[in-house]
Length: 170
Image 1 (spheres, helix red, strand yellow):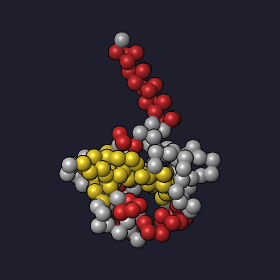
Image 2: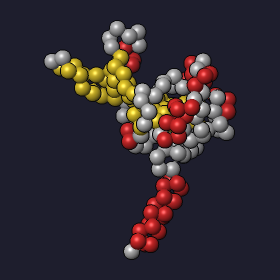
Image 3: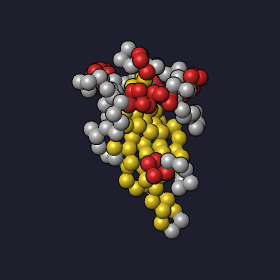
C-alpha cells in the first residue's frame, strides 16, 4: 500500500510539472507569446496588502485594496533580489467599500501580472507584463504592456525591475 501511495505521489508531481501547476509555466500558453491569466494566484504567497485612499492621485483608476501575490520562485527572488525564470508576481486591485467605518472588498478593478522569462522577454529585462480588466481573463487593458509597463519598472535596477518588497519572510 505504501509503495502505491509513493507511485501516486510521483505521478501527481509529474502531472503538476507538465501542466505548470503553481504558475511555473505562466504565460506559455498564449499563441502571441504574451502573458496568460494566472490561475489560482490567490493561493500563492501574499507579499503585502495596501489601501489606496481618495487622497492618492491615481485613486480613480487604482483606489482600494492592492494585494500583491508571488509564486514560490518569486518569493525566493524577493529574498535575494534576483528573480529566476518562472517567477510570477500578481497585483490584485480591488475596490474598497466603506460601510459604518469598516472597509470590505468590492469589485475587482484589474490584475497586473509580471512573469520572468529571460528568453521570451529579453527586450524588457526578462519580464513579461500584462493587465487584465476586472474579473476578465482575456480583456487586456494595455496596448503594449511590455514597453509601457517596463518603461517604469526598468528604474528598479537594484531589485530586478520589481517595485514591491516583501512584508514578512514566509
